Image 1: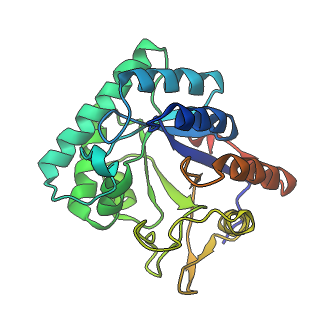
Image 2: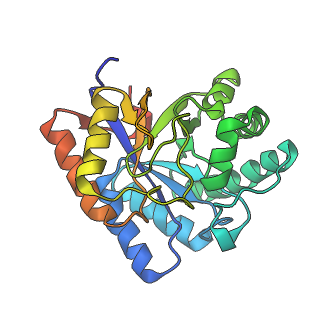
Length: 258
């Protein structure tokens, strides 16, 4: 697989529930090149959406929507019964809300990345993925749809004529089928620095990642995700940027990746 010369580093933000968590998000933002902002349903609210946009704008980051399921108790990470119509309306309402705040702040959204259970369900369910892509087309065909590498989200996005970005995860364990290990399982979240750096290096340089059972997966990726709620996320972000600089990989915002 061709070695990448540049990569986007993204982070899910606007989800902080406490001042301490907001401080971590604010300190993490300068290390990334794209942010995915919660739209007030699984987490966040209009005020946090606005302040997060303002901070991301200071660093000239690509700003995207991170719509999730209406389940604050689980922070959008519990799978629920979903219909295509419900998902279509869910995406339309949440992305529209962030778009309106962005417009008031003088920025345009660059992308949409579904959150948590919605992301994982749509990755394997063509009907849900189709509903997400259809909603984005209604809002703005120029929005990039982010989905896990090899997922139905990318297939549906392409079918609807959208630009898509394949995502890899440096701080999550993979299953042999390319899906993420559920967070309910032990060792689903990775926070050992050497492990995270080795994973990022392999994904960017070789397009490979080792699944939890030892299977070697081959993935094309356009963007890497580092979760802000991963233990020691700030230290990991600094180490990732250092590694990329030393290995000659430029880190660019998602909508400048080409």
